[in-house]
Image (tube, rainbow, N blue to C red; front, top):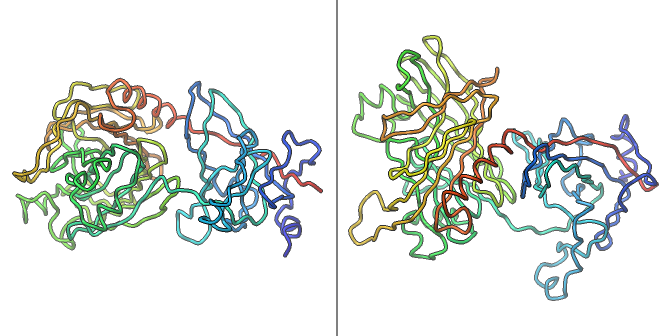
Length: 459
């Protein structure tokens, strides 16, 4: 079926805008000269400049969902066109290399199948947007097999020191889970992706700089704490300091009281991990926790962590698939470990920051390995205001900053995790980090909006 016929079938009921009324001339790339395009308007609802801000168009809001990914080309008509590639570039990259552009710039994107039914659920890309800007974006329809683009994020499940665990990262910072659901963080000295090296070569996160100084280091102590991110439950309204965590259960305490791990995978909380999306612009892992018996309730949940290109944050979405408390007033929570030399603490508007100088060291205290003393390591948690975050300091488990949250009617909530250190290429001090977290809180609560305008055709 030709594209024209396909549009005739799929375009019934679409608003068709004649080409003569289009604000922007038609995009071309080499011999790719599409004849139809979808027009969207995307809007920044804040008074912030937003570099590399996510734009997510959901399939249910997309007028033509039955399209192969090679039939979609996202174009910013105000972007600078790329020049034609040189012969030397073509000799290396071959026929899939982008050709010379005219009338706009292709925006790299992803079509992500989040529920794994073989149909994409979200179109994802990033834009630099000015305060309160509304911009036209075109999605051109027609087969286009060109466009290599480097991966700026990565996610996978590795067998790491005989332990199955998830990794997700941007080129700036990364995260992984060693202790069940409490997150480790690591920083890089130059933008790069290091988790494949960590888990394929089984390299110690504290010693990876011995391979390449730019790879950076683990920068988060976890042990019994929340680490850079963890969830919990507040099961006892009359005891606000008391929390329940998936790896702090009566079964674990009875069978292995000295351990930082859960007990057996049948008798105690167990976990399963998988990769949902792996780059290039965002990468996502899923954690399933099952058989979590706190002694005061029974729970199971899914938690998604998503890393975004060019950013120092990941977003966590938590969905309780089973929520059976024995009592009333049980609230969900999320938080992070208080920095051991905290000299900068901010808690307001649904976000908290903990940072300070820190000694980065292998927790096993290997004698010949020198500790790294850095001027600044920062962590932050941002909870969307719609989930009514309430701050609580938890002195247990080496001290943690935590928010109570009220989920939606589906027992779901979202929060953001931010990480930075003084050895990185940006956000290298508390002032820069504080400003970044405040802006991300505003962006997180006010995502980019979009509106479908119509289908345009040259004919």
